[in-house]
Amino acid sequence: MVLSDEQLFNEISQLIEQNQKQLVSQANSTLTLLFWHIGKRINENILQNKRADYGKQIVVTLSRQLTEKYGRNFEEKNLRRMLQFAEQFTDTEIVATLSRHLSWSHFLVLIPLKNHGAKIFYAQKVFTELWGVRELRKQIDVKTYERASIANIQIQNENSDTKDVFKDPYFLDFLGLKDNYLEKDLESAILRELENFILELGKGFAFVERQKRMIIDGDDYYLDLLFYHRKLKRLVAVELKLDKFQAKYKGQMELYLKWLDRYEKQEGEQSPVGLILCAESSREQIELLEMHKDGIMVAEYWTELPPKKELEKRLHSALIEARERLEKRKMLK
Image (cartoon, rainbow, N blue to C red):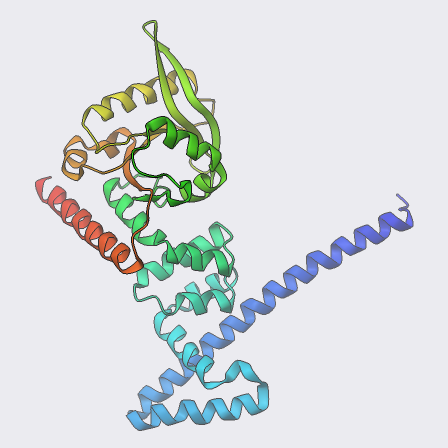
């Protein structure tokens, strides 16, 4: 088929742009791998030399020489980051895989993190959810790893496909709610800020319906919010509670999930799961009720965020408590 001049130009332009993106990606990958190999080689040389003063001096001297010949990428500060990079990511295959999806700028954000599990978690999220550097920083700031860890311990299950999908707590400070709000106020605020709410839920959630009506034995029941998760291929029922979790909420959610499974589940979908958002969790009740076995997740929501240090302290305490409950659960089996 003969193309018009404009069609030919557009087709060639598309080819160029596609290849430009590929070249940039390859260049980033090559550069990241180069920095890792440099850091690895310097670390090995310092260890083999076994002189502490040599280790300090070699970085200064080498960075000066490399910067003079190859430019600012090899200044002392960046060279030290390469050493840290090689120390923290020791597996060549993992580095090669990650470098195809993460830029050096991504790694510079990850390197200062003290928890190795957090580094791997965020690294995987970058390429599964296509986070840029700014989004990566934001997710670290709002403690996505810590909240996902707390939630995952609650739903601990060898065959669970909901790992890293849910969080606990959820930060709803963007709703701007003040004291003494009602459940309908919370729901209305979420719908006004639906985009932000979905961003807080995480990637893959799509809004389906508000106040989903279910007729059971001639009576009307209403589910607060209904979502669908593309990766899980499941409907996600969300109930909002203004108070502390109560055992009766489990029965209510079970009823909703059974109804959705019978009347709303489409061919190819998995059974629906539920998320009960409460102002406060009742950890022992949730554990005794074994909510995760029924596909129900319970999480707190915070409409106001505490100062950073207080936030870190509270999440750290919650994570320790969750781990202790998990160990207790294992011992009782």
